[in-house]
Image (tube, rainbow, N blue to C red):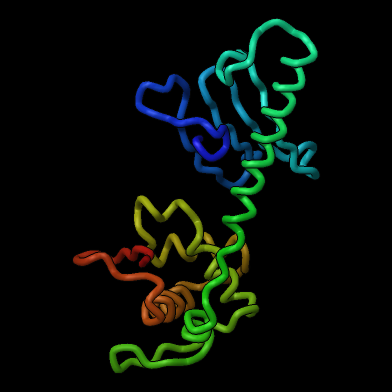
Length: 191
């Protein structure tokens, strides 16, 4: 909220602060509320990304309520700047390529703890599906299992089997991307 609205947020700040996990079959919408105002981002007609800011109380941003040229221009600037800050934050989040050493450790075969760790060849459809599924938020709370991995990858690659999931879990574990939760058949992402 602080980044998007350029305002200090404290426990006393009124507004709705919540996160919604987006799942398949749901139209993705991002909404951020600040006091009586909000910024909303969605796909218009499923084709174009639309970002819009609604200011319902100009006092939230120190602008007067009287609709004059000066207040109107101030509200336009606030809306444009809010939209731009949201888009800039999203672009910065996309610019997170790993350093060459980390990428090389993942895409080339190696040995970890005396055990072979097969390569995760970047660009291979199964590897790309596997890495995409590791980014899925659903397993952050319940952990990743063979069954949950199979379900996620099967949506991307039909015919994905339990044997393939076992092999892939072993590969990403040996590469250090996941670790087994003690006394369970579940895995969690590593830092």
